[in-house]
Length: 138
Image (cartoon, rainbow, N blue to C red):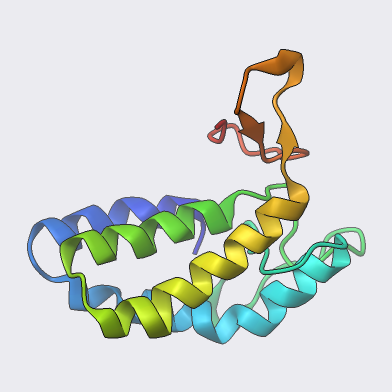
C-alpha cells in the first residue's frame, strides 16, 4: 500500500462496488498503533502513515526512523481522500462514525502539528514539509 493505492478506488466507486474497499479500510485500522508510534517519533499527535505498507504490515526501518519512513509524510492525506470518496459514493452514518471520522481526525491531528505555512506568504497555503513526495502542495 502506498499513495498510488488511491487510483484503484475510482473504479470501485464508479461502478457501485464500494464494498470492495472494506479490506483497505480494515488494513488502515489494523495499522493504527504503528501510525500513532510514527507520529509520536516526530513529536506529533495523530497518525502518520509510512511510504509503504507491505503484506502482513511489513515495512522497512531506515536509519532508525519509523517503519517505512523515506521522508514522505503525505500518505495519510491520500488515504483520507479515499475515505471521503467512499463517503461521497455511499454516505452511510455507520461508515462515517466508525471508519472515516476516526481516521480523518487522526490524520488531521498529525498534519496540524507537521504542516508549515507556504514560503513567501501565499495566503492560506500550507505545505506538508519536510516531505519528499513530489505530489503534494496545498
